[in-house]
Image (tube, rainbow, N blue to C red; front, side, top):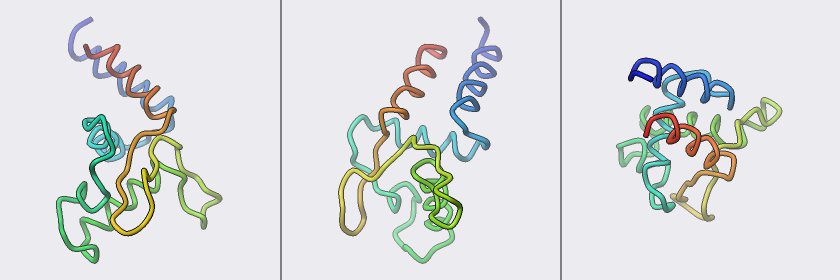
Length: 109
């Protein structure tokens, strides 16, 4: 399988898990690249200001990958979750997220 076919297959796998945008995929992979929950949404936003547009964008991506919004019937994908409580909580993949990562690794490695 050539590189283009691998990428297309990986995108189809992600789509089967509910991902609908490249931004969701990028954010998912940013969480996945650290095997332990060491990053927070603020860290992933590449900004140290929780009022910034970058942070709000990152938080929106996390909400979609996690349980979703309570205002949209919890429409999240269940791929990520908070690893702890309190301010600046770290994030990690759920079991479902780890399953997606494994399938992606099987295709690309």
